[in-house]
Amino acid sequence: MAENLGFIRCIMKFSLLLSLSLISLAAVEIPSTGLMVDLDASKGVTVDAQGRVTAWQSQSGPIAARDFIGQPKGRADATSGLPTPVKGSPAALSFRQQELVCHDEAAFDGLIRGDGCTWVTVLKVYPQRVGLKDVNSFFGNLRNGQKYEGLWGCLDDDNTVWWGARNGLTFGRFDVNNPKLVGPKLEEGRFHFLAGRLGAGPGEVLAEFFVNDLKACVSARFPINPQADASKLAIGQERDAIQHPGKESFDGEVARFLLWNRPLTDAELKTVFEKVR
Image (cartoon, rainbow, N blue to C red; front, side):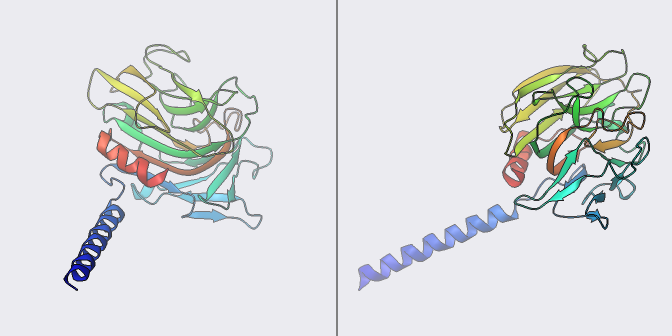
C-alpha cells in the first residue's frame, strides 16, 4: 500500500512539473519592446468582394504606421497589385508581383540611422518571374529616388535569398555602403524562417542574416549614415515603386512579418524563432 502511495505521489509530482513547464512555455511572448510591425496573415486582413487583399493591419507599432494597403498607382489595372489570402497552417497571403504599402514616410527612418533593427519573416517561395534581374523583393523601405537608401529583403531569380541595407553615401547596387548578405537557395513548397539583424550605434555596425537557423549564415559590416533618408515600408516590394510596380516584387507567400527598431538579443531571437516558425 505504501509503495502504491509513493508511486502515485511521484506521478502527481511529475504531472505538476509538466503542467508548470507547459504554462511557462505558453507564457513566453514575442518581445514587445521596439516592436514596430507585426503582420500576421491570420489577423487584420481586409478583402474586397473578389477576395483580394486591400489592407493588412499590423498588430503592433505606431498607430499611424499600422495599415499596409494596396497601391494602385502606376498600374493599368488598379486591382492587379492586390495579393490573395491562402488558407492553411499557417495562414498566408499569396503575392504574385504585388505589394502592400505603409504610407508613413518617417516611421522607419531610424532603422538605418543608428537605432538598429531586427526583421523576421515566415515565407514560402514560388518560381520567380524576371523583372529586374535577381531583384525579387519581399520587403523594403528604400527611398524612392536618389541613392535609394533603406533596407530590403530579396530573392535572386533562382530563389537564392539575400538582404541588405543601403546608407545613401554612394550609389550602386552593391558596395561597402550597400552590402548584399547572400543566404542559400530556398526550397519551394515549404515555409522558411528568415531574419536579419542590424546593430545599433554610430560608425560601423554588424549586419547578420539567419535562414532557418539561429546561427547567422552570413554577416557584413555596415557604415551608419545619420542623414540617411529611407521611406515607406512595403511588403512584397523593395519600395513604393509607383514608376514600375511589380517589376521588382517577389512571387510567394508571407505568413508573418515582424520588425523591431533595435537589434534583438540572441535569447530574444530564439524566443521568436520558437514562437513563429
